[in-house]
Picture 1 (cartoon, rainbow, N blue to C red):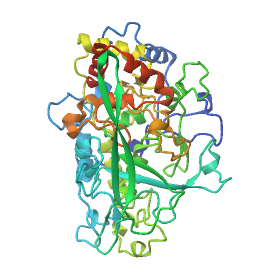
Picture 2 (picture 1 turned 90 degrees about the vertical axis):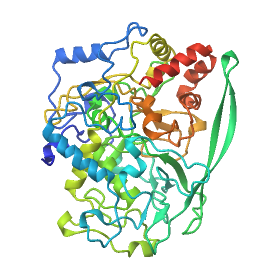
Picture 3 (picture 1 turned 45 degrees about the vertical axis):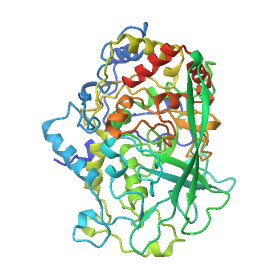
Length: 511
């Protein structure tokens, strides 16, 4: 059965008041069709999501990272590709259909396969699975690679001074797509077209001394857009390298009530702990209104459907009802690209990816099950968790939430989940800065990345490369790149005794 419109909309936020203060009391009807929590439920939620009184002891239910949707932690590389464990047999058909579309390789138009053509003219990949291989995270190009599959460059230019943000979103930092290269650089093109560029990088090794006589080495990237097909980018171009993130648990993150996310925001650091998370507020063409950003490295997308549609457009040049331009990211300056034949068809609503197909891909992405934790009662893992809390890591990587009660989305409804993220923006310092704003996010701010499943990265993706551009080659390197609000916690990790540092990493690997 194809997901109904009510089912596909259930769990999405209603519009935020325009230019209003971002306070929980300003928001009404947090999720469409959500059942309000009773006072008794609110007390239960506060109890089960509170910091542990003794972090050296196992907590109830933490084995099931995704609540009842949690799947068994498989030993193979398909650990991120299972449907939510609480999905009905009937709905598993929708999941499989969505998976088929997610793994499909698209072709150029015209083609006899109407439902599979329309690729490009410019693109980064021929299919979703090409970047999100086995639903895991991407990686930067390796030595000798002639392409950057699973990675690309965002690009924009500053908007003229005084440009207002969409619908008056407060503190919005206005930017514009590059007048020639658009919003994203594409390194592939159809026959007769020119790929925009080739991604190149140089690495600089930086030694880091650790307490106890140990050392680490960080690699600092210097990213370049080479072989530019349409002329220089210009001095005002703002570039940001991005690797494809892992896909699991997206529907559960979408189902967290907005009030629970805003409860962790402290933009002025009122409590004096040095942590000042801020929500990103972005424009939703899906609802024609500003909404809370949740997805992407800077929380630039508010819903799974918008994130999926944006990837169809930017990564593959495929139009959807949300982004109906069949030329994808081709700009008016790229005239040959704009004149290319497209795959839009009346049978699909005049676009290349129909609403039905977008619904199914969205359903698939929402319902990729989160694997169960491993070794939750192991003594070293528990010691590492205690250190995680002691150093203040949980201030940003919030361990637990309870999702909204959603009658139309039973897989995500009222689940105690353990994503280890607050979904807020944090200043991570100059070393990680891309200096490219995105909605309200500044050039030094990034969304707290969810940690669930991170210990299975090598099993699924075949590598251990982390952060927005894959520069970190291990979890330790990822921690050592933290700066800004996380500088104090990072320095404390450096100062740990080697066995305590090993315990902290062992805890992260159990997530």
